[in-house]
Image (cartoon, rainbow, N blue to C red; front, side, top):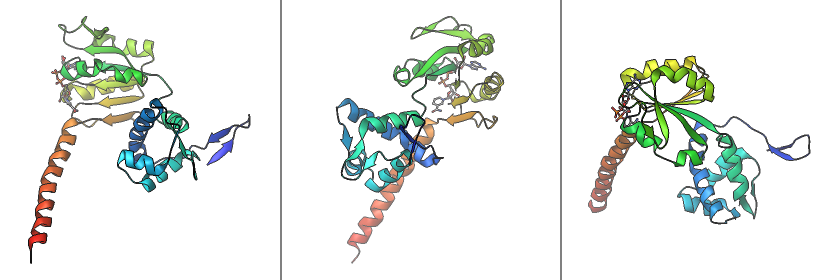
Length: 233
Ligand code: NAI
């Protein structure tokens, strides 16, 4: 998994990583960050699995993608692994965001400071409602939609956040794409059609709630079956 670069330092070879592994990376990153903050230098896959309520083999398999940080009898170097996963997630770079839609959800996102700690800077907020334009949300001015394109270019914005009604989201996404945005964080309940080079991450809190609902129902069902079996002579 290691190669040597021109200065003879070890480098992790980047291979294509499956989306399933990538979707687990933020959780590893979070746990490793907490361990690092607590001064933990190394951890075994077994210890990490107990902490994360996962399995040691899943963790080993996932983390094997990132080179030889795990060593027999030593475990993982927390700092190294944290840094490497951060790089893979692109968290060693600053991302510049523009948020479209300064309503309830847009304001909640803009008020959440932790995104900035991870390098996601909300540079500008846009809304079509004149009553909102000119207001400040956590010190960030709400601007009219007419300024969107020039602002994106001037501030090198790479991520657009859509917190507008679905009827308006497609047109707004088209405008973002036309001015070269690299990614869209889409909260509107509509599937966007964008060129392949533009990354879209859909976030639907209600999907998560529906999954929770399914699990509640399923657990009750399963539990009933198990109880019935146990009392069946
Ligand atoms: P809201 O009505 O409070 O805010 C929407 C804002 O978008 C308003 O300020 C409005 O002036 C602005 N807007 C409307 N059309 C626009 C356009 N063409 N250009 C610029 N700004 C425009 O609504 P809320 O509650 O903030 O929800 C926003 C969107 O997010 C909705 O589509 C809603 O369905 C969705 N949503 C999604 C969630 C998720 O988990 N994905 C959770 C909650 C809301």
